[in-house]
Length: 484
Image (cartoon, rainbow, N blue to C red):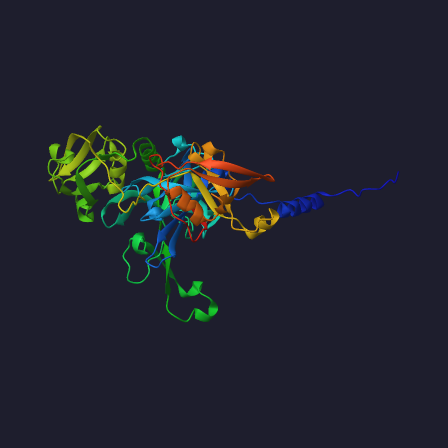
């Protein structure tokens, strides 16, 4: 045994050592705990739109949130006018999907996957955001999943506007960066609560409108003063920089819309039958309304709930069910999720305060631009050309198809086809997307030869019409996949 004398450390030495250890200790990342466990509920949505040039596709990539077995919700801006949808799960598996429902007010769309991916998130704890609270957006950026972006809730009662759709005034804004692909990404508060989902985050090109549908988007402008610029540019004028305005659906709106889309295929909203605007400041000052300045009624729909309750253009709405109103967003928030219920409104007319009770109507807002492919024969398999590496491992000489996924209960599943199988022949011919597609389209029974675990199997397949809600897609030139 070797004895070693350990020198005694003084108080100053211990303090210095503690500081050094603290300096090298891993720092806790703010907001990281709020996203823990939610990664398995996120998917990447790739939407393909066929162009006028044969064989070329326009590609939109966004983020989806798994809300049920085989069900994903995303921003409607990701899937407008699509011809094909491919969804990639957290484990890297890719399956095809169908756009089954959408809502034009919340700008949300519901997808049905042909095979379940990920873990459904619990929407029961979703809540609305609080102005100024730190948040983390989690999604796909430039096609790469796992993007985390920190910011704060930088604005409430923001309005999303698009041609042909009603304005949505109960959106909120975040200061987090949101690169292309983050549309549809969930937004979490630091307590782990889901407080919303990103709808749009784009900068318009010259000559476009505010709408993301034509390549544009809402924009926030920052003024960079000379002192904040590099030293070689400080002699010039201030620089104006455009930043994307990241607008999000609120958590309670998200929960309500998803529940209706899943249960009914559409969202039934409460309707009051009027339009409002900000109350002029001179009126606010004259009547001493203070911070609860209300909203002025711009128009009243004939025979609507507000008309039946006696409201008129020029009235100033002050409170709904006792809650002060400070803009159209707060009124919309009070009304949207309460179709058919009664609402007590306090309003100002000619300097006098009045109260009226109205029964909210109902409204549905179809999402424009949804496309559906004509149904055809179907076997329920997603396939792709076998890679040269796998072909060499299996000693294959001709063309072959790798099975990416098989829909449960489909003709392919009933015949015993499995994901991971390699189809080497279709009725004695080389297996290509063309030969397999022709056999399916003929809608008659055919035989495929399958390589599996070193064995060669022969399976009999009989195509059937696809079940309701399932869309048959054509070959995907960009991803190399075909659903049949």
